[in-house]
Length: 127
Image (cartoon, rainbow, N blue to C red; front, side):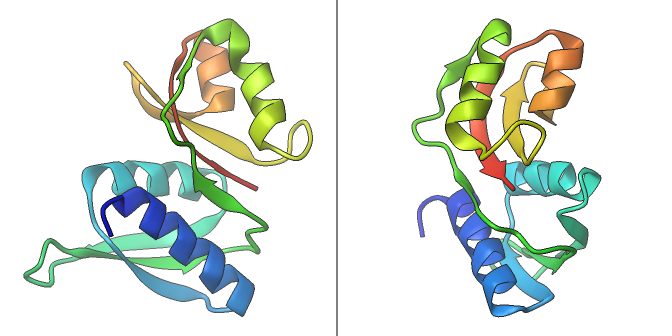
């Protein structure tokens, strides 16, 4: 229970495999930003922050079946011209799934990073 992002992504994957639509994950700023990217690409319907007196929770509604998701450890530095190499390493095929990257412009997907021409640190993947 040391890596909240890893715990959240494992919970999303397990809930999708079990057919559950709603789940609770521990809250952190990074988890919230990654969930925003997942929501933008339709992997989750919505999420909301709920204060529980212990740091808070995100109530997440899973939108579609998640085949696999996880964190990328260690958080490798990705140059803008190396994005396709990392996509082929973590995603099953071209244009299937997304990599979540932390850049100086904020947390975004690999397609947004390509459009902006920026690199960053690899955080997670989902497909």
